[in-house]
Length: 121
Image (cartoon, rainbow, N blue to C red):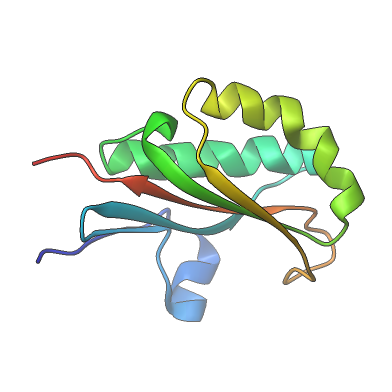
């Protein structure tokens, strides 16, 4: 089985020892991703952009995402992201889980992790 690692070049990848995504076993596993911005909406949009780039590098798109996990320090902020998420996943919604928890830095309002079907080779 081949494994392909995709790096976004983020500073924490080398520091912590992970990569943005791993293509293995028929899936693309995208690491939990935070975005930039002053609020949950900006950070959600930014994180999805980073995830979309990793998926594209793996040869897939959001339509192949089969699982998504959302992590937020305040579950009451999640509804602010609904329109963005519905627009992103459109007619191909994945199975989803939202967990309220602490994130690595209080400035982060949302972290998103996805799993997608890998492109057939």
